[in-house]
Image 1 (spheres, rainbow, N blue to C red):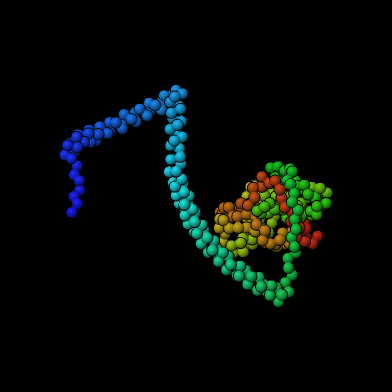
Image 2: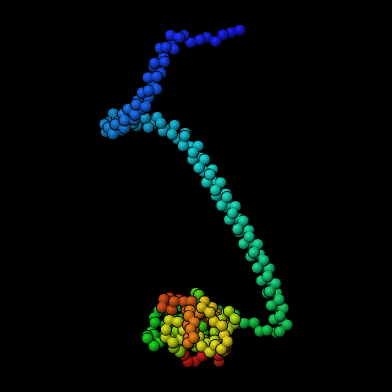
Length: 288
């Protein structure tokens, strides 16, 4: 049976003090080495720069080798997070798509039913709507008149009585037409009267301007229920405007008066659309 060689007792006795000394002074040596490195880093001599450069060149590949796995791991983590987010977004889009498909089927069914009912009742469809866009070039109004001048006239197909809209709602109607320009009476003017209705409850009324920023509702039914925020649209009564054009929302309701906040800031009009929906000439007004 083979025996392992034993370390000589004399060697153990000689190395034990050296090991104890090294353990005792290792921290001190590290501190001294750190201080020396910091001092060497502060030395601004060509020799020190050369040494620092060579040390950096020597350690750069090592640092790059250590940095590559960390960068790869970071990219993997980002990819996992992005995949998780994409999965959640995909699920939301699937749900929205399913809901839209349901609405599409309902809309198609209602469209077919509406077409069938129109055929049975021999309903005359609404005329096609066209429009011309014009730039607002002046506001010739004052404290008692709310009008704007637009660069579109008779040569562009504009006629008196046509509705004028911004991108979001009705702003007024054409009251004067020239060859190249027209004057639009705004809904806030004292002479403006527009048949309207509330989308909620289909309550009919007349929108009357009074030269303030918010026109008022008049001639409502005594039992009409009106709340702040109700949308106000044209009713189409009288044939001056097509039905369903948005104008504003109810801004305030008191016992004495109901005010409507227009959807468009009429003080900052830059362009308007003048609608032509095929009204007969005898329905177009001749006076403001």
